Length: 129
Image (cartoon, rainbow, N blue to C red; front, side):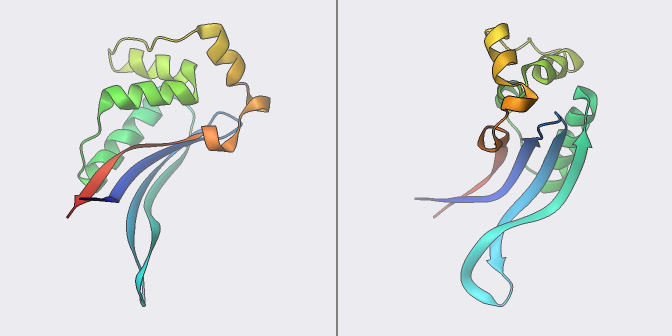
């Protein structure tokens, strides 16, 4: 039976189009058995280039010792910001993510960004019982 994530790499994008990569662990709150929450173990913020974002993702993957599905990463970064996703694909010699370019660019304008659309969990370690 699946009980949830214990480790996760999370990427956020601000309205100013800077990215942050968080290494998180789902763990007990100290002193309170049975009460769990996401703890941020490491964070790399104010990432403005595809190269910096890629380096932060590799660092997070190594920090948590979890494999990221890079195809999933590419697609989801493109969902947050297609231009950065395309630059990341070029940086890593991947195929450029497909999308209706005009629709993506219009929906990702800084003034129209919504907080719940600017956070993605890219990968993690699941616990099975």
